[in-house]
Amino acid sequence: MRIILLYLLAFSIIPNIAESLEIIRGKPLQGGLLVLKVDNDSKLTVNGETIPVSLNGKAIVGFHRDEKEPLHLIETLRDGSKKELILKPKLRVYQEQRINGLPKNMVTPPEKVLKRIREDRKQVAKARSYLTSINGFEKVFSWPIKGIITGTYGTKRILNGKPRAPHYGIDIAAPKGTPVRAPQAGIIRMAKNLYFTGLTIILDHGHGLSSTFLHLSGTKIKVGQRVQKNQIIGNVGSTGRSTGPHLDWRINLLKKRLDPHLIAGTMPKK
Image (cartoon, rainbow, N blue to C red; front, side, top):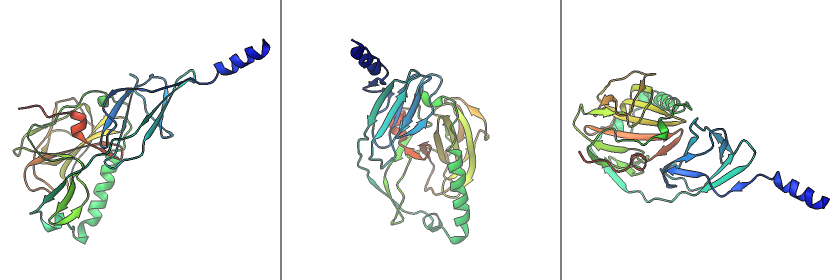
């Protein structure tokens, strides 16, 4: 009898491994973002690294354009029990896009501007590095403008006949001056003219998720300002490396570049 009791006692303190966490939005797909529901006082790790959990018990994970390895999530509850989920991204096939007529210095920059480009990249990386507790990431995103989609996420780009980095945003053609609205609430982390992307805004939605708006003609905000969903933050333009008025909208989860189309869904009709 004593042996049985000792066995039951030992078994009772082994953490309970549940089959999965709860995914409330998104799919495991290259470029995709998943919003998870977890216990608000639990600890969540992804491939061994702790990620933040909101007071509402929400967390986010995402997949880069070319990510192939699975994410191993472990939620550790306050009582020591655990829930696990392994997410393997579905692979995508990306199209090729050729763009001609760009100024030569915007495809192969001269030596004198390389220092500026490096500094631009450092500032963009910093603006996308915030792990704030704001919870704009929890809610459904809207499109910042409505227009004709002329460039898609992940496209292999050939600029003036030369292969360049893939496109990590959605290009939406619209008349110059068209108001650009915040797709979700957040804090402005950058509003600055950059070499390649022209007048650029970076909006922090919380927990490492940010939106970037490129090639603007004007801004309606300042750095550090809190903005609400659908608030006007700038205007469509054609600054930087651009052949005509459009908005290039990008979404990052820290260093991972995500697909805005997957996050915002189908663009509503005008």
